[in-house]
Each structure stands twice: as C-alpha cells, then as structure tokens.
Length: 286
Image 1 (cartoon, one colour):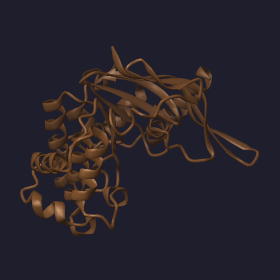
Image 2 (cartoon, rainbow, N blue to C red):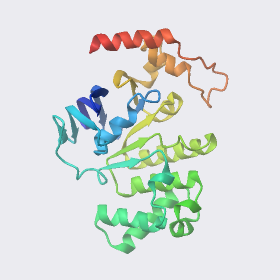
Image 3 (spheres, helix red, strand yellow):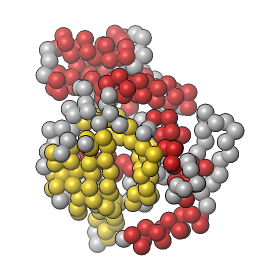
Image 4 (tube, rainbow, N blue to C red):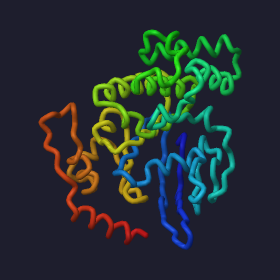
C-alpha cells in the first residue's frame, strides 16, 4: 500500500493575463519504508511538488486538478485542501537551507523541545531528553552545548544535522528532504547523507528525496522519478536508470553527473538534441 499517493496533480501560476503550467499530471507514490528519489534540473518543478504536498505554494500558484492521499486519507481532492493535521507530525520536512529554516533568535534546544512537545504531547523533561538523544544520534558529540547555541553559532553541517534530528524527533512516517545537502561542501554532504540513511533504516521511515544529483540518488534510493519542465519523464529503479533501455534523458542526466565513488567516470554535457526530442515527446503527451 502506498503511504503517499499523488494522482494527476497539476499546478499553474498566474501573473496578470499570463498563465504558466508548473506541474502537469504528476503521478507519484511512496510506499512504507521506501526511499524514492525525485530528480531533475533546476526549474523542473521538484520543489513545487514539495510545496503542493505541504500546502506551501506561493500565493500566485494554484492547484488546478489532482489528488494527494496520505495513508488513503485525502490531503487534497480535486485541487481542494482537505487535511493538514498530518503535516509536521506524520510528514516531516528537511529543507535546503538550514540557516533560513531555523529561528535565529531562539536556542536550538527550545526549537527542538517545542516541536516535540507540540507533536508528541509529552512533558518538557521528556521532550528535552528526546532532543538530546536525537542530537547524539546524528553524531553531535556535545549535544548539551548545541542545545544552548543559536543557529548562527553552528556550522552549516551542524545546522543540517539539527534539522535532520528535528525531522526524526516526531516519529514521522514520511520525511520530505528537499535538496538537504546542496548548501554543504562535498565532504560534509557525504557525512550528512550517511546519517540520513542510517536513521531511515533504523526507524523504517519513508523518504521522498529531492535532488538534481543522480549520484546521491544511487546511494540512497529504491526508485527514482525523473522530472523535466513540470512533467514526469519516467519512474524507474536505480539499476534500470543506468541501463541502455532507460529514457535517453535519464541516461543523459546520469552521464552528466560527477560521482565521487566513480572518480574515473567521464562527465558528458546534456546535448540539445536530447532536450529537443524530450520537449516534442512531452508536447505529444499533452
């Protein structure tokens, strides 16, 4: 059974008389304890899917059609919002930029305990103990010092570990990770990804991992959905995405990815003829 099920989701944005389609007939599902990668170039619509799920679309964007189900309960039916009580409790979010996401004038410990108390309905002492334990689980050695710190006093990698700890602290069934390592340097990226993978396996949490990097997807995900210009190109397993039978655009994305675990792999640009053929294919679908 699917934990998250997105059916025929379409989103458009209006600017005066101009209407632009951001997402078109998106079908996507994530099963229990599964890690699904959502990849595409910048502007493909990856983060817009996240915003639609979390009810965080900009004011000028509108869901024109589609359903979003969570455990068969409707978050969205026919473009109308139905339930938000899953968000923040059953569905957690790890954003791209931790410095912008954490409250700059509140200590880390207070931000974590507030979230835990609100979501799990526990006492302050229990919330504090859980926050401390989760910080240690994400390999923060001096958890007590970090709980007393403000976000600007921590490094980027430490802040991202805090956000991962916060996401897992409420025992969610699904975590949406929106390019959580993009703002980090390569060595810190590797550590943060390993922590995310370890916690996902420990708690059997489902993850929708959004990225433009097929190398990251290859290490973390069971399946991958490829997005281009608001359309889904294909959904496939990782082994299939690297076979000659994969969609030409998927293979081109893989060929254009620098892999730290394959230092001798050549990096090839995505040729314009592949993009043009894909646009023609998507126009025929529409």
